[in-house]
Image 1 (spheres, protein in one colour):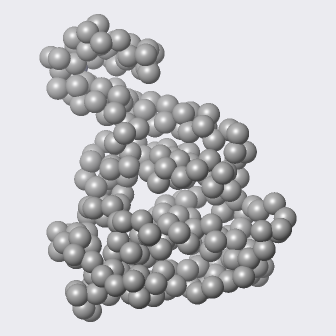
Image 2: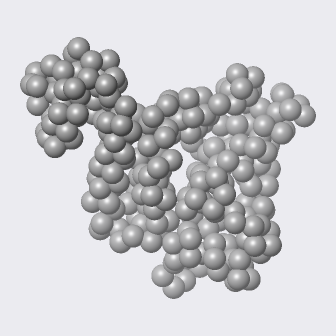
Amino acid sequence: MYLPFSTSAAILGSDTGLIREVGEGHLDSFRHLYRRHYPAVRAYAVGCMQTSYDAYELTCHTFSELPQRALTGEPFVERRYPGCLRLQLLESARIAAVARCADDDERASPQFHRWVVQGSRWSMEESGRPAVAWDALPRDKRCLLWHAVAEQEEPALVSQVTGAPAGSIERAREAALGTLRQIRANLSLERLRRPDCRGAVEQLMARYPAAPARQEPFEHAGVCTECAELFSDVIHLETRLAAQLPRPARAPSRC
Ligand SMILES: [Zn+2]
């Protein structure tokens, strides 16, 4: 699939704005979405399929569904991953890849076939409270963190996708991570049983990221399993995001 694209086009809209325009019949906007997301969807398809032809066919199939769904009024970007078109596209590719794997398992790459045989579970869905915290995050922050942290994309692309100014992406990224950490902490605060838990958690959150080693909160975590788990999630959240967020068991190679 090749679509001519003019870089002299007017300032592009966010994903949400462009998908709305496609739904209103402005199919020209689809070209911008295609250009914006093609490299990531293609890389994902390469990770799923055995041959480059099948990866190409899967990529084309994934994008071909988008304008059709938008035009028929299907809430494509509001279904399972509200506000994050990339996740919708990756899910669409994954579902189609699983179907192709069921028809002929030799079409799937060895790692994708292994992942399907093991039950097609995404790692984030198995990780308990971090997954619940992720689901509770506002949709705009989820989309920003997916692109900026999980996929580690350049601020310019994250800016295009989200509509936020490129100069504010780093600040917005830190704010979104802070919100996710707080949601994760709040989920535990509701459940912690020891009387000194709340104080330890509040101290950690108040001092983070300048978390002091060997001081009160960590002494408490040394004797409290639940707080130790929470502290670990909070402190290592950013480095774990790429592995914790929903992706196939083994990240597909980039092309
Ligand atoms: Zn505790």
